[in-house]
Image (cartoon, rainbow, N blue to C red; front, side):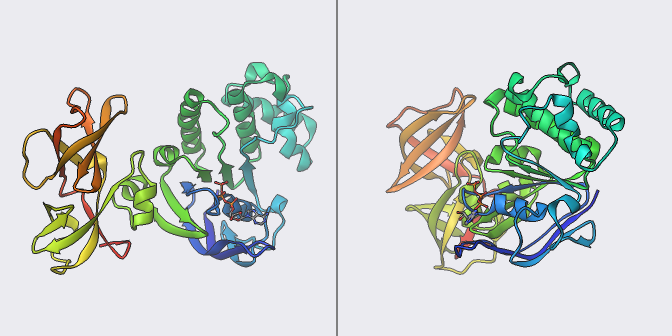
Length: 354
Ligand code: ATP
């Protein structure tokens, strides 16, 4: 087991695309770290560069204190699980699991023993002589995990390993994978474009944009205090309300309404200053009747989220969203008031959290 350290890591592809722009990152020993970001931001490139499948064009990759920047993939002591699992169709489950050990020239008896042990741990005991084509998606995924575990690598790298599973299996696999990582305590970097997955599984996470890391933190930190408006808009199953605001003494003028300056920005704003006010729909209280310090408007849309509803209010010419518990959802066209939680509201100056 080992920490992964990236120092000024840069990858410019031959065509001139800068996929990684001087990234610095430390993933401590034993951590489950998620990489999240929109399509094309460089997640897969980052993972492949750690694995050695792509050569860095600048900077260094250090694993367990060893600079592996110029080291071949097979010599880096990391194991990678790909999105499509990359199982060998002509080999049975046992041989697939044992394949990395064969490459390392481990004798056949020991290989079989290890494959059986790891397979049993992942609930594959009855399936060891099947071929991948005779397995479900979830079973194939477990074979790919078993193969990674059999290698006893210093670090695991996962590239969207759950994306080929249907929604229910995906939830099961998520819990299973998290538990397994805890038990093994192996440093893990996990790429996903599914933020619910990152929030649920990671000890810490990074949000990337165009080859840069825009925020690193625990899922709670990233969700509750996005460092900039990019992360604020990207994270959350319903996007954060990001509204133009002007400072008026100890209040903010937002869409013609007055709300208090958020607790986190108190005493740090200048009168008359123009900012962006951010509140998650989950951190809005909702009231049918008049309310103090509220964003008052007309209900434009009511969307069913299951146990709650997402209500969109037209406040002047600005749309404001609030999550309302089931049973309290308003009628479209009625008057509504969204009351931001002062301890959860945020203020952004030039796109950065104040
Ligand atoms: P996705 O979520 O869609 O998989 P990603 O965040 O993993 O995206 P990458 O695949 O790392 O993004 O790509 C980062 C950037 O590098 C993109 O602009 C992409 O077009 C470019 N890129 C990736 N692979 C190559 C390549 N082999 N040659 C040239 N450019 C590439």
